[in-house]
Amino acid sequence: PKIRTTRMDADAIDGERMALALGALQGRVQRLQKARRDAVAERTALEARADHLDAAVDAARAAAEDRKRRDTIRAVKERRARAVAATAAVEREIAVLEGRVAAQHEAFSARKPRPTPAPPTETPPPGTEAYRACLAKALANATD
Image (cartoon, rainbow, N blue to C red):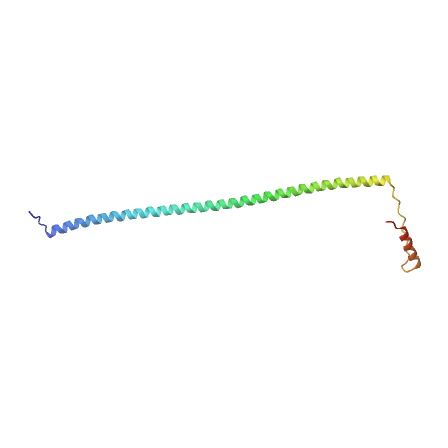
């Protein structure tokens, strides 16, 4: 026996199929929308993490620059302290040498009394016979 379907039965079957297809399509759209929302949320989270990492990198760079600046300042202070210490050592050595020179001068002057220089005499005017005689006398008295 053959099943007879009427146009109304066929329309009802088509309607059911369309309803099923529409339901499946709506489910697929909802899944895609959820996947899109999840992807947007993940992208937002990744962007926030990237911003956080950028800030951390900037902070690390600033800390490295500060550390380098502090190291430079410390090195300059150390060099200055060494220079001050070296200057003090040189000044002490100079004082010791000056003391030795003074002691030698005292010993030398105690051993050999120095002759007192003759009081200066008045020089005659240049071009005169007396001036030439004075020069000759000075040359004769000069010792090397």
